[in-house]
Image (cartoon, rainbow, N blue to C red; front, side):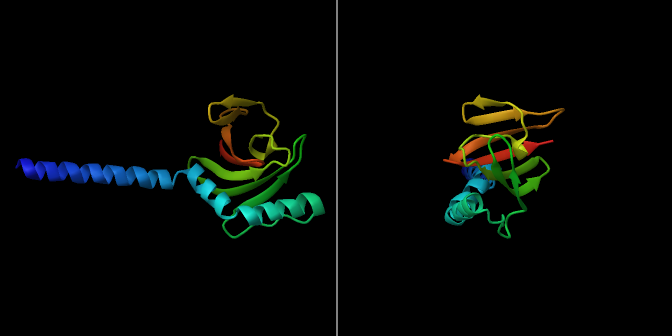
Length: 141
């Protein structure tokens, strides 16, 4: 009886570890980071062409949309996926300035691992630097 209990406990622990690893792998920020890392060269080339030569924005089949949001600090925002919890993606900030979703002019509050913003009502989000000029975003409405 004791041996079967130990086996069952070991199996439960293993399943919990695997579930935790899977949840981490599919976490929105990790998904976005993996995408940006895998496509870094082509994304940077697209931004160089866009900002230096004025070429049109284009996006791969994995991107839901790509938008240019002007402002004091311009940005190009890529929406990678949506979910019940919000919108997730990344953006390029040529000035290397963290910005709110769609470059909405709301103040950002610095946190231990990035910045957060609060809009009207329950509109809110976070942004984190992935590398110079590239940022992750998460927006909720």
